[in-house]
Figure (spheres, rainbow, N blue to C red):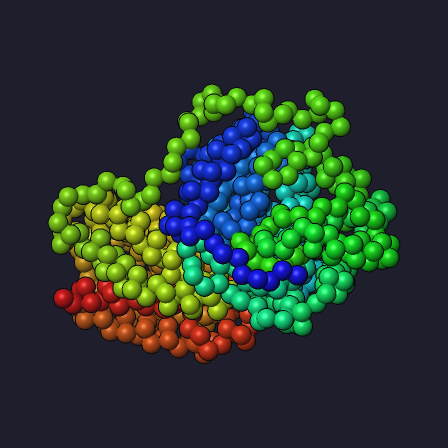
Length: 598
């Protein structure tokens, strides 16, 4: 298999998402258009009155997932995050609104913490506005957790992630919505497709992110990483470099042992997808599929319309994955149904079975705004009042400066968990937070209500700009703290202790983590306790002491085993490295302490 490094084009990582989405919309204008003022695309066929809107999404770096699968017969829209990061709740909300035809919205995406948080927040907002929403998580990757135990609830910390099998789930959901099924029916069939799908992958070399000079992760030369995730999450085991036939056997063996009982009327039919991760050549994949086909047929299975190609990639990662979905008559019919998207097309049996994308109007549907470029948060209007009169803005700026100086180290810590974008994401989010706070902090510096309004605006802006699980958690932390300050009339250390406690409760509820799970809570909790213990003292000294406790606790997370989020799948491999979220939070608190004590 191909393992030689692939040179990049020198993309600007700060504009990469905007640039590639604009290019996609230009190239496939007959099929998709940009969502107004958002990082997302919506099909030219959408919204369609009375039709369920299927909205998918996830991070950049995985094309054709997710924006390449938007079009008649498949997804109605896709929200797109930054590289390997979930789209923010605001982006998901705007994308869903652009696709909603009044019959409800089905969200479907891979089971990653950031996606779950941001899509979940968007679903709550839509529901509050009267839009019916259902969610189907894709959990097809057998390497990312133990199989479900019948009759027992799944352990949230061990739920499996979604990889290339999401194509099957999206295809079934899109076809069901296209034929007119209601929201409950579309969700039922999508969940059934997920339950009958299993995927296993292998990698031979890592990938390099836009603008980076070194790979995000590597695979040792002459080895194959079995079960590695699409963000570089560690695999089940490392083995010697495998031949094409040996690789096919490993893929099939791991999928077959996990396949559930066939559905009634299935008669051995299976949808099969051999997916390239970005660098493996098609001819090489066909060699692998030759043995995959033999093995599946020897096991009594009948591949139905197999697909070999790139469906969920990881930039220039070298590797492949095998997805298998058990079929019955209904699922086979939905899988066979026509569709037309930038990356995948099913030709209809009759020309008029599918409304051709080319016949859609070149202008947006009536009542919708023309697509515009998303305006970076840093371009928002700013108040011309002096920075000294904006204490929340000044504190956030101090935090931005310190965290930006440590961006590379935060990325290194995050790469231990197979990601590496924490530093980039938090710096990007804090820049947006500073701009939003500056515009929203009009009152006198002695009024906490002004600072509260600034933190509320900053939290929303950070979550939108940063994306990912960290963006959602940081945004919630700032917004909840701001909500407490916005109700007060005077500053005190007790007020900030109350704000820290409210923020900790909200972060714990959103992320499902507890102190000791090796997350940002392990730094936030000692900070909260420190403020409460020094509540009778002036704020600058109390904050400084509490921030020191947070910094010590963040360093001590190196001795913990991760129990939540993507890092939890590493198990003991995460020992010896501090949690990047705890470290970045301790830097934010330390910078604020330095600012208060000037």
